[in-house]
Image: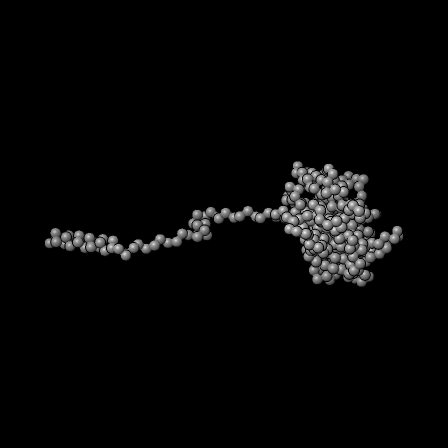
Length: 349
């Protein structure tokens, strides 16, 4: 009996194996390969990310350059227009004793607002993005230059207040005197001062000397020098960390450093234009290899009054310009173009 049962079970197993190996009875297809996200979840290793795109060095457009190409007030984003006049919202134009026409001498852009020093009325007008006057800061003396940094206006006055920087708090309306550390600015006045609102702090430049704001002591400390060496059409900027950047600014041209970071620097350049007896100003951005990233020129022929500090650079490196014509002040964010083109001479490299 046991032998008969064993034979029957053996036959049933053989029949089962034969049935499983018949044609047309295929094994189920394998599951799809896990996605990258699933792989990441299983292995715990993040998928590699692409390197951040670096700002490319642009090239010139083919053919003849378009009209007004690279002219700040005509080739850029219009930020604000302020009419000239005597009203509370308007900027003033006036006449100096020597018969020279004068108007606003400095401006800044910060936090979506535009700040303009109204020289005729000794005040800084603060405009919102819609062109309304948000505040008027009345001053006691003439301003050489100013900047806006972390909710304060830092002002460099003319005599007799040129022994320190004055900080106006936009929240409280209080003004504080910030001296230079003892002996730091001995023998220097504030004529030609440059405010540099950098990503890592507020810097003042007087010639090659650089002073940094010490917020704890409320004073400016001498920190280092950024030297400039001129060799004909080239300027070399030597930074305290050992970097040297050589830029080709062209013949009959001088440059001033307005802003810098680890990757870029922004210069104001002034060129004597042959045959026109004029000096043409431009703003130029270079990378740390000395390659021109972009440029825009002031349309000085359109200017009714010259604004001494006509370029504003934010801590993030955004560039703004101002032009004063008979109608008033035009504040623009210029399109930086890949070559210097004189407003008078056409295209130049």
